[in-house]
Length: 476
Ligand SMILES: [Zn+2]
Image (cartoon, rainbow, N blue to C red):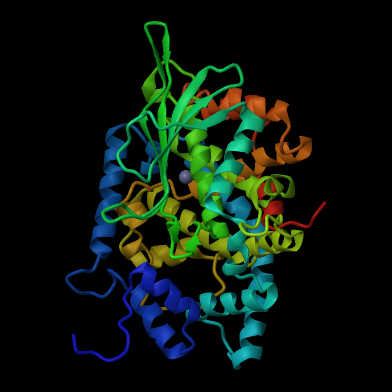
């Protein structure tokens, strides 16, 4: 290629930073419109017919199996159970989040006007001015936080928290074979010395390793012939590798705050796997309904924002100083920044998903019109005629999220509600932790998630705790 300058693609690692940081509004517009026009250009790669065909075939299958719609078929084996429940859930959150979102939109519009004389905020201004306003307001830089999050300290923190809550001890061992020298292996036991699990942690990138972070199980827990076989559980991440001591220079692996919450998230999934205590492997640990599986992982992230927990591990790697409280306050405040608009966006995708899958699609002929109808009342930005979301909404048309997009918010409601119980009694309260372990973590998919959850919490989850945590409700 003999081009001058930079090539920006529509892939996320290229597109997102450009939309967030590029000062040139015309180029942002060009890229945003190109991004939104994927599969919607009346050419050989247009997806409108595919969208219609997919929803019609899904509907036909559901009818053959005796269900009213595809959503009825899918949701039967979900915690939410019915399309009506999902729709009510999304609508309720929408109504609650909308006033905050409207305030934020007005605030952002005013900021863009003041900064660059923008008269009308468009979609391609959103990420850019949000980031600028965030920087102005919080002055929170990853580089300032990282020295407090040395990888070894964060792991120890997660272990200590698991010890205090769930009576687990982690001992690093070197007598068990694993697949790479970077992988650390731990024997997990309880205070009585009984084996709970083997835990592997594979933290650093290397050639050939997949991106991202996940939990996996090499051997699930199960009972056979009266013997409780304990599981082998692993978490895999991609954190920067430490620089080994050489010529006087060495640097440990320091995590961004986002990586800290990622580690806690995956560790939460791992606890679900390690504390499993059921008979059948298919129902053990994370073998639960899809909209329930993120509860143990997301709830663990909450400890990362609490002073009492951070004091255990967030210490400067050179000075040993505990992270200053003002940093924590800033992390908390910035985590809910523009949360109203974010929430509206997530809800609009959930509603679009339900619009495609929750009714009889045989009469639909116009993809864009159907989409606009579903998005009604969820967006403050002007519509872009050249753009359509559905034609590239691979989550629901290609991946497995059809009738499942609501799960993201659903899981947040669950984890906020569960953590509210901890906050009420104390984030290290042994009784609440014991209930969580007994009724949620150890039970896997042996009973309906709502039954398990109610046994832990004493009642159904209430969305008010999520709205409160997200700063979308007046504090009471
Ligand atoms: Zn997860």
